[in-house]
Amino acid sequence: SSQTLFSVPLLDLSDPATISLLNSFLRRAPEPEDAVEAVLRCIEYREEQRFYDVGGDELTTGPQFYDVEGRSIMHVHIATLVKEDIESIDSFVTTRLHEFDRTMQNLEWPRTNQIITIQDFTGLKSFKLPKLLKQAISAATKTKLKYYPEVTHKSILYNAPAWVGLLYKSFKLLLPASVTKKIVIIGASDGSVRELLEVVAPEGEGDLSGIPTEVG
Image 1 (tube, rainbow, N blue to C red):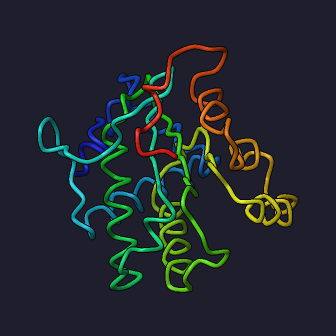
Image 2 (cartoon, rainbow, N blue to C red; image 1 turned 180 degrees about the vertical axis):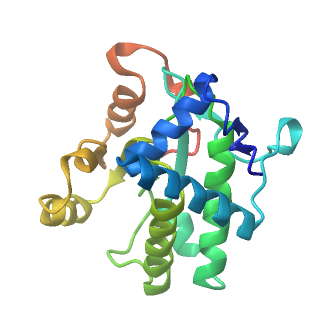
């Protein structure tokens, strides 16, 4: 709908939720005219994909876990994706973006307008990801960057094998500081869950209930 975006009134500048949403587009495209274009691209993409704002019981997907500040936590299990039978890159992108779209609708604008993503490497045995999966993940990431606002608070690589850290170091210098400051790598160890808890519940606040039960 052109009247709401992620269930937030789009044109009511007196609504703090609207201002918060528009600021998330400004984080992606700092120039106002570029941000306006980004909003229009997002609306057009959602209409093409038939991603509609829903509420209440209809909003069945999306995050069920939150950090101590109330930020939504998305859990992506890499080993499960490796086993997934990907019909096509397009279908993979549509499924992932639909899940992300529902997560956006679950945000409590303006109070909790950011997301923590846990990329969980637990159980991943192979150094190499299937070629089609890598292409599909890349396509989904590019689509999200193109059509959605910037809402990432932290991107956590959890139980990451050593090669993940080495790979990250090899291209870290190519990334802007605004990106690298959001990336947290937690290697596989006996204390990895505790390290994760320190990120989502710093200074001992909260408890393990803030971490998705599937993690680890």
